[in-house]
Amino acid sequence: MVKSYSDPIEALSMAIRREKEAQEFYLRVAEAAESDSTKALFKELAEEEAKHEQRLQDEYDREAMREM
Image (cartoon, helix red, strand yellow):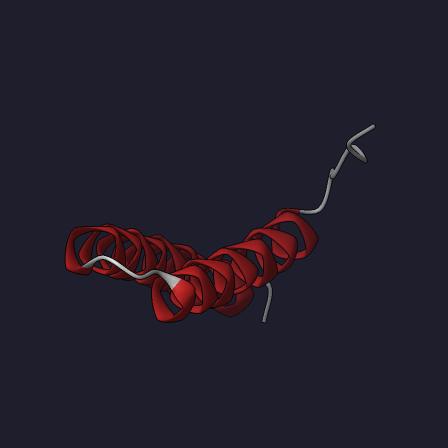
């Protein structure tokens, strides 16, 4: 069951961690893949997760500034 997050900072922090974990997972799978097309797919997925992480980090930074 997913915990309910009422604090945006806490929710963003958790989401950032999960994006990092997904990136690491996709990169490990890419390293283990035998075909070039599979390697490329998982590297692309890792890049997408990096974009998601950056968006979340930007929002985290904005939210943190509001709380100061």
